Length: 329
Image 1 (tube, one colour):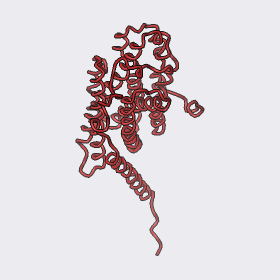
Image 2: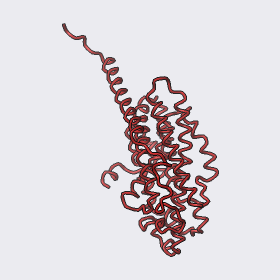
Image 3: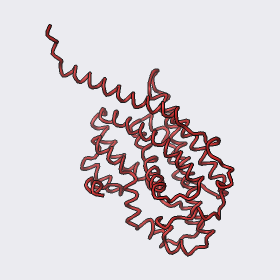
Image 4: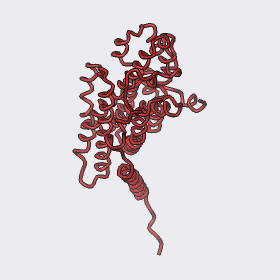
């Protein structure tokens, strides 16, 4: 008996089913990984081990010479206890901003999960991620508390403006997960590089960083797979607008995560010319910011969100690199 010829509609339907199953398999693996390998901040971190204690004058907090500020003549001229305190201040500020970002992220994830239908595989993973982000917030705040420093995190106006973030999923879940990558990719880039180059000297910072990297890898993977599945299905106008807004979100987030805290600059009276030299006008810092969003930039290009107009926005935000340059690097 001759088989009925398969129509284009049949083939497209089969392809859609295959893609859906592959996507759900990824989410299932991520959920299983969250069960099999996770950390409890007050169980798995030896906070009171003598070698893990946080002292403001501990030389292990000093910025390494490869750090732009750490390698400056101004920084090297400071007394050892001041150099240590500046390094500790930077680490603590990064953790405070991290827990504030993850606070916004958790609220947004719950808003997203609130509307998911019964049987949705995303529901379980989103709750795994929310729990893990809650643990990250606890370990970051515990670290900040133990420094004894007046760490504030995000500047007041930015903190106020950021309160719209948890409501983004009600308008566009795709934009929300771009925001997720905008906060997670830059810090993941910096932390992996610091560990790879042996820049981390204090064991407490190292164990916190390793826990964060391991669990954030799952969160980043989910966001990327979600966008790969959803963005190609968006109406053309929506995809165009998403491609215009994404580099703005990513450029702002990268600078929040990687720029020196204003409170630290004021507290240690770091001269304006030093700030300009090592941050504002430094081409290496500009390249670091571009590199920190490289994976998300490549994802946006893959998803058709990098046309000529959109590329101009990436360039205006200072986060565009030619693909050929990255391949040759």
